[in-house]
Amino acid sequence: MRTQEVEVLLVEDNRDDAELTMRALKRNNLSNALVHLKDGAEALEFIFGKEPGEGKPDRKPKVILLDLKMPKVNGMEVLERVKSDPRTKNIPVVILTSSGEDPDIQKCYALGANSYIVKPVDFDSFAKAVSDIGMYWLLLNQPPH
Image 1 (tube, rainbow, N blue to C red):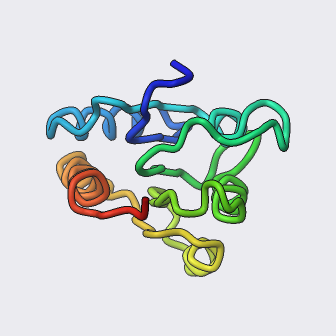
Image 2 (cartoon, rainbow, N blue to C red):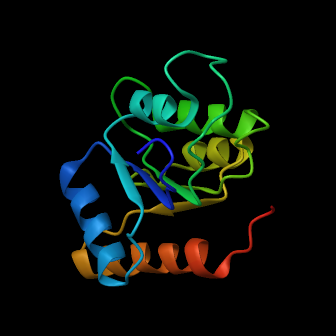
């Protein structure tokens, strides 16, 4: 799995939200190379390796869907680490969270988030939002090479 290309890195501790996200992406054929991690510590290890400065990140997803409120390492810390490292700063990070708090929104954009989406409450709206995210970041967006 070390060399497998990852298109979507989903970092979400809520199992139900993760399932809904994965189902919505799969329904639109956008989940071929999706990896789901349950907390920020797993995300940092996945992207950067076990030890800081361990070498170059060998897993650069096309997009990271990132929850904010997670155990161990929160989403803002993951966002800050990804966007502050020249090797990973161009990876689009979409905050997908239940927090619509203005300070969270402001801080995420200040740290380099590419998009901030508050999770809709009902399933159909949630599925549509995730589908739209996937379509945009995986099919329409042109990343730098």
